[in-house]
Image 1: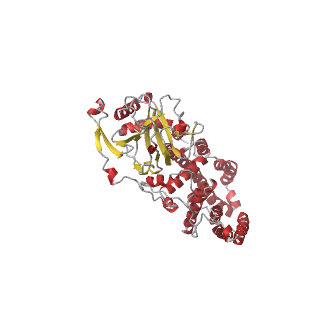
Image 2: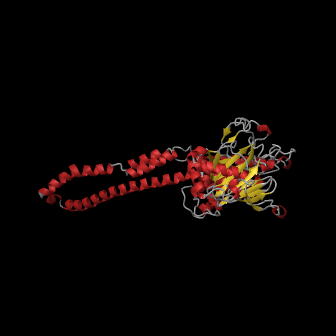
Image 3: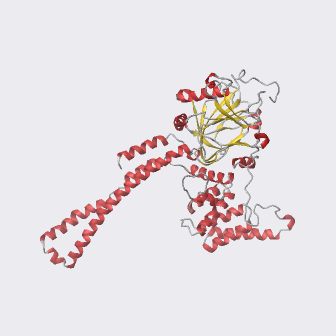
Length: 535
């Protein structure tokens, strides 16, 4: 391998070695894999060139020997009567053929294999593949996309064509099956059958698909269909041992079901007669409202409420820095008051902050309400980093700007948090402030509760990725360079439970945000307490 290829690979190893797996949680980090794969392809092409050169030499030698031996074998004694021919025969067999043997045995793949072996330790893991598959299923559910639409890559705002093969779809279904998610197993295995029936070539066989599908529908309570699919499987593969056992078991269960009286029969079944299955109910009570808002449905922005929303120039209570250049302010919601500011960060500032943050990105965590320990959670899929003012002048500049806009001090605020969302990246409904049963959450900071949130959108998002407030019926869409601001606490210091919000899954795009959480301490004269509990 050429030295420059090795150098480039090692440079990428340096980047990747700073990353702890979980590539699927950050599109920003996944871009490193693109470049690493590109270098790997270059290494592979160089190996192919070496192999082709070697085969060319062997082929040339073979053609030469074929012509020579056809001539010499026709009259062996006459051929060897010439002393030069006799010498050359001895020389070829003693020297030239062993040299050819060495050429054939030459391992030209060693360099490529070495590169691949070193890089493999930085490859995505099984956890990444499962996480990416779950992300596609999350997008499927949230935005009501059928597997066929996803398989064909027909997503809004996409610049590149991307399709899932039969084997890809089978991988999706198998990932769901291994996670005990039989609902999605059925959807994706049915998609595999559709693509196989359409004549698409694949290594996956119908027998393999029916094996998973029959058991999945059984787990969903559809015994009749499980029996039918198992029979189809056995018609394709009569020697399938597990299918034979399942068939006998299903037939026995069906016979027992027939013997039951109507009063003892199961009253509710997951499957409808058409073989359509209901999505299982999960832990999130406002799931339907949350997902409908993510789709842009159910937004409660009535004409009456819309009349109370205005645009204005904002000078931050006549802050000297904003008198000459005030910010454009737009009301997003009236109560609680949520506003959007325009041109808060320039493209140059955004790129610089992303550049500083990227090496520090780590899987975003949440605080366990029972133990108080920070842990990763499936309902928050992103990576984040925390930037100090000493990291770069642009961080200090952005902090000052947020202070001028809000009129709140950043002295007691948390560090600037930068987040990049991964495949289907999201943060399900949550509160930014600590509630009554979590009073010790910010005790170690000594700055009180989170009084307000300032959220900078550092990228546009082609589809999805909205910030939604389920209790309000509000949805705010990312716009690069803008920021939204709201108070988490009432003036009484009590939490405003209407501010429960979520970051919707990113359907298409790469979402970058940064946020500043302002705390209570230091704001006593900047945002005075109210006279009543609900102020």
